[in-house]
Length: 512
Image 1: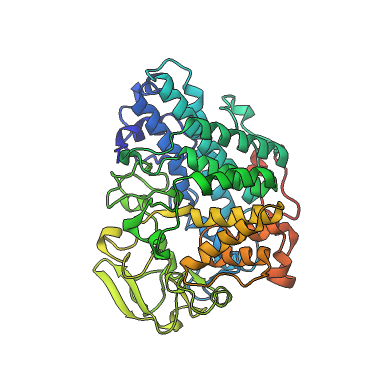
Image 2: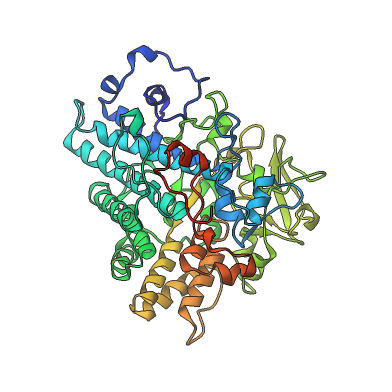
C-alpha cells in the first residue's frame, strides 16, 4: 500500500481541526499552505486518507487529546444487551454507560462527535480544493469528489445514528465567529446523506488496485444507499439498491464465518467497508495519520482491541484489561449447534488464547476471569494471537475492523422486503443463507420472518457496531431492557462542550 508520511506533514500543518500532536516533526512548516500543497494527485490522495483515518480514532487510546479509552466500544456495544462492563476491571464511565447513566459531559460523546466532524472537515477541504489551481485530470477530480462525498455521507450517517439531529457540515467555514452550526432536521440529513452517496456511486470505481485496498467503491456506495433508506424506511428505494447489490454486486458470504475476523483474510469478498489498520510500523497502511498519539507512538496505528476485550485482572495471563465482556443473554440467543459461537465468546471448556510481548499464550478458559463468565473471542483465537498481528509489546493489533459485511446487507434486504411488502420468499432466502453458513437449518415453514430477521441480525453481527442502533431504530428499547429503559436513550446527548461553544445555536437532545 501507499506510504503517506509525506502527506502527514502537509495536512497537519494546514490546521485540520486540533488532531495533530505538537510533538510531530512538521518541518518545513513555513513552506506549506493550502495554495502550495493541494496540487498533485498524491497530495489529494494524502488529504483523502486523512479523512478515512478519523474513523480509526473511534477506538483510539490517547492521553494527548480527550484522554480516550476505546470510547466508541462503550457507546455502541457496552450500552447494549450483548456486552457488559466488567464489574471488577472496567473504568467508571463504562460501568455508568452499562447502567444507562448517560451524561453530556462524559468523554465518549465528545470523542465521537469530534472524530466525526474532523472526518467531515477533511472531506470538505478536499472538495473545496478540487476546483483550485492543481495538476489533477478530470478523471482524478471525478473520483476524488466522489470519494470525499462518500466519506462525508458516511460520517454524517454515523452522527445521525448517534445524535439524531446533528449539524450538517457541507462546506468549509472560514470565519472564526461562524463555526457553530445548528441542528439539522432528519429530512435534511437524509437528503444530504443520500445525495452524497448517489454522487459517490456515480463517480467511484467498482474496485481499486491492490495498492489502494480499503478505499470506498461504487458498490460500497450503492450498499449504503440501501442501508440509509432502511433507516429512512423508504422501503422501495431500499429494496432497489440492496437487491441490485445482492443480484449484481461483487460480494458473497465467505465459506467460514471466522474468515471475516482473521487478520490474513482482510478485505475479502464479504467485506463492503472495513476500517484499515497497518503492520508493526503502519507504513503499509494508506489510512494512517497518527491522530490519537504523537508520531513516535507507532502502536497507536493499530487497534487496542485485545487490550480492552481479552480477560484481565489479577492473575489473568496476557496482561490485558478485561474491561468489556459478552453477556449470558447474548450467549443464550444462539441456537444449539450454531457454529458461530466459538468465534464470538470464550466460555468454560474452551481453550483460551491471548498474546503478550513474549508470544501466544494458550490455556483452559477460566470463567472466573470475567464477571459474566465469558470473554470475547471475536477477532481473537489461535489464528489471530500471533506476532504478525501484534505490536512488539503485545498490546496493539493490526486486524481490520469489519464495519459493513455482506451478511448484514442480506439481512437489511430481508428487512426491506418484509417491511415493504416485497417478495417474502426472497426475504426468507436471505435469512436462510446466513443461517446455513452457521450450520443451522432453514427456518421452519410459516416462521415470523421479521422476528427471525431481527434474531439473526443479533447473533450474526454480535459485538459489531450495530445492535444498539437496531434497538433504537426499531423502537424496542423497553422490550429489551424493561423498566430500565428511558426513551431519551434513543439518541445520545450532544457534548456539553459543543452546546456551550455554540452559544445556544446547537440545541441539546431532550432529557439531557
